[in-house]
Image 1 (cartoon, rainbow, N blue to C red):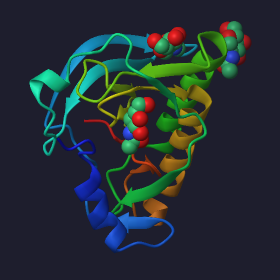
Image 2 (cartoon, rainbow, N blue to C red; image 1 turned 180 degrees about the vertical axis):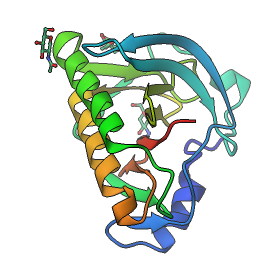
Image 3 (tube, rainbow, N blue to C red; image 1 turned 90 degrees about the vertical axis):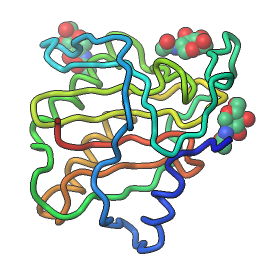
Length: 193
Ligand SMILES: *[C@@H]1O[C@H](CO)[C@@H](O)[C@H](O)[C@H]1NC(C)=O
Ligand SMILES: *[C@@H]1O[C@H](CO)[C@@H](O)[C@H](O)[C@H]1NC(C)=O
Ligand SMILES: *[C@@H]1O[C@H](CO)[C@@H](O)[C@H](O)[C@H]1NC(C)=O
């Protein structure tokens, strides 16, 4: 079983690495996606939040592996380090102001709902959490098939701000992602589809 579907893609990125690599690939897509819930968050309730299952093209997770184990371990990955990769070329990326609305909504929820959120194990119904506002979409994806991940909203908001700025058109990019050093998760910022 292949735990980390993203690995081959990242190996390609890393091969042409510098501190902030502008990779040749575009945003990473789910092969198929099954939505389990949709709601609106933030002060203005204008940022769409979706919980879904992301089927990745290279995933080898078998049916008997994807059963949500009720007492699966929970890994808190708040403030874990991650490596940034931007998508080249420039053009067609999200509007930074739209991404800021998302970052603010995540911070709002972090203060007024709960500081953390959970993404269930890779292969289960809510392994992907997406936030969307106008041109900007960001998501958190759990890549660990055996654990729920707990992540801090404040960290996600920081990554949205960081990625939308550092991977903008002025930097010859149109979005990017930050993948955990241990590859258990990544956060992507991209244009809305
Ligand atoms: C939490 O909600 C209060 C009341 O709506 C608001 O004033 C405050 O700014 C919110 N916190 C954040 C971080 O947005
Ligand atoms: C995350 O999951 C753990 C274990 O099931 C639970 O104790 C915790 O309340 C959950 N946190 C949130 C924010 O839902
Ligand atoms: C996935 O989570 C399990 C359970 O906490 C942990 O033992 C394992 O190391 C994690 N996988 C990786 C590669 O971090």
